[in-house]
Length: 256
Image (cartoon, rainbow, N blue to C red; front, side, top):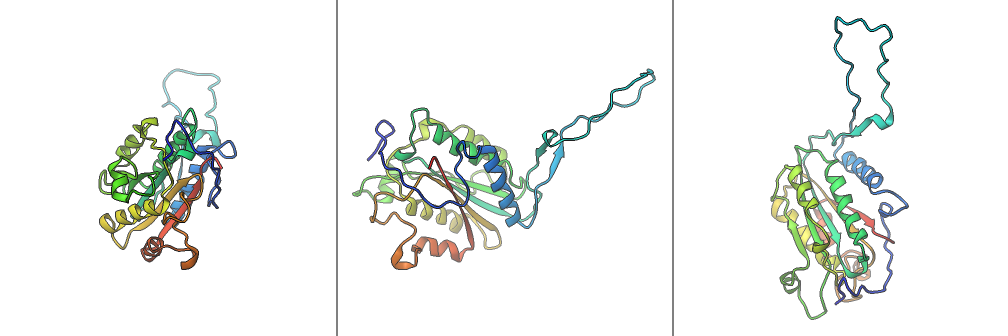
């Protein structure tokens, strides 16, 4: 099992729905694009609010040449959370396997920053979020045993903070390098944990989305950790169950 001190040298790629949060695209820009996509899935759009301070109220003092109020520019706007009232349950799956490791934990921090930015773009009164921190263990370990080792961790459930996205954001902000696990990449098991979130905490009428952040293919190969299986038309039983629930899956490549 790889550890942060001895990351594996593999460099796997995986098709992604969005570019990786790297110099190719800033985390903020990527989060903005994903926020637009999620809001569109909720049949709504995001609203922009001007941040220019209003002109002062008139006074008795005579000002011969008052300064004009500046016109709003793109830089004077901030993104407002999606205006949709449709209910959303979203599960973030963040990869902390050994191949994500770098000495400064920049890849790991980029994952957390991206998730936080996406959370801040969601409808605040109608969204709930869960976060799964996944890596993996050796071939002799079951999912339960791997969880007992502190890996494959559900950091918080859909029901933990309810619709309080400020608490969700605070929980993400509190995560750091000490939450990075190292190890293998058990993607199928992470999807299984996400499926448990929807089956346990979600209702059929809610929009359901998974955001998967990972640096490559499941590993070790051919040991049941792949959600895409050729013998079943590239769909594991877990993915089939998620499809039955109409779960949308967004995949983002990290440092690939």
